[in-house]
Image 1 (cartoon, rainbow, N blue to C red):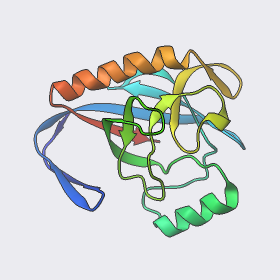
Image 2: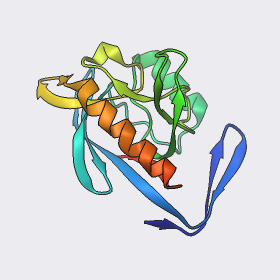
Image 3: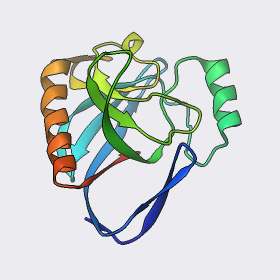
Length: 166
């Protein structure tokens, strides 16, 4: 996939992407429950793993941050809005390791892709693993590390990593 010309806002700066190859990561949310959301993560159209997020409350990237905050306050743990986001690998202060960071998520800060097994392991982040137990993930770390390696290789090839939440 080639970006010919697009702009993205990152903390007040406009990032322009011109003629860059893209690693496209897609999360298709397939099971929306009261306390969690299960999804399928694919890389460039090929299934890679399952995901676990907080409850999907119908947020979209087009909503105002104020509306998103109001929904989060009234409903509790909430999955990030659907939409397209840029991803970079950065060192997490909380986890003390290099993890994918999702940029430009309205109403959220510090959203990452990381290991975890149950809904209480996330406050908005995307957990990766295998959904073999209802509402949970297993083999999370074993899935996360190769994902980070693949993303790092893409960045080393000067590719852009984009995440689509659907």
